[in-house]
Image 1 (cartoon, rainbow, N blue to C red):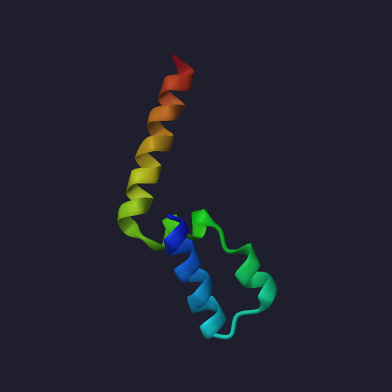
Image 2 (cartoon, rainbow, N blue to C red):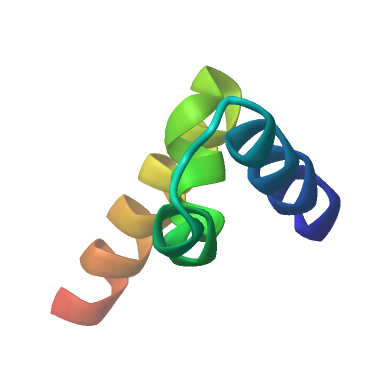
Length: 54
């Protein structure tokens, strides 16, 4: 995950994004950009939510 975040920040810099935009990039941005990671994250959150209700 850290490596993907580093690559995302590198791509943002190369595309001319502002310094603050690059610094604000986080793991959620990485998850959102990858459909597989997004599905995994959604499933985990649902399971945790269901577990918290019981």
